[in-house]
Length: 193
Image (cartoon, rainbow, N blue to C red; front, side, top):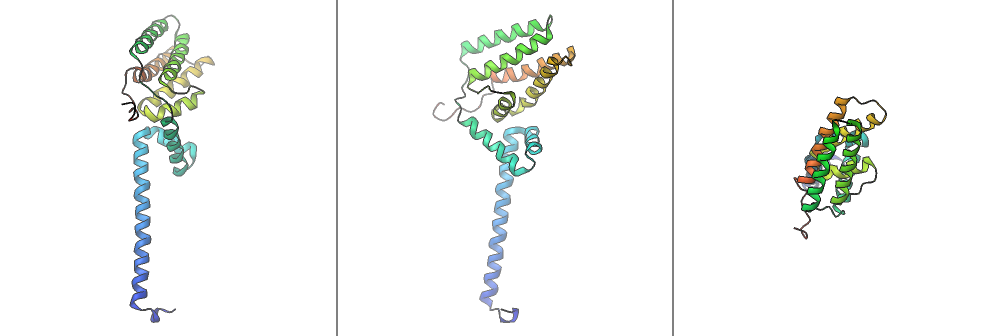
């Protein structure tokens, strides 16, 4: 078929096909942009960028973040009962008071206490990376603090953390502790609300 033998109907069909293809591309880009915006808002820029670096591409990063959210949605995450809140708050005060005489031990206790709080709230507490990934879904604003505190705790175990580093770890742990114990809360499932 040569250009000279195309009818007006053929030209209209080609133009319509082109418009449909362009509309499809535009719709795909819009959906992708909105998904990226939702994931960035939910996980925060720092965790989104971290996922990009680990995944190697936006597609793998966004897929991994979406899988995290789906995983956490299956958990029975709950608010702390008042008695648990009071118990954990008292335990935190004790950990902080021990910092003066034994900063390294206090950091280790703070890490352990946070793991207990997470377990009581309904988060699995297997290894650190999985805990951090799970926490990132509902508490992305404090995740960077948690990662920093944990890194300092690991350096402390190797004897590489100064007292100032340990103090910083306690400050970072406190940020996550306060969020897990006192809120803001993750939205509860509709059946539980």
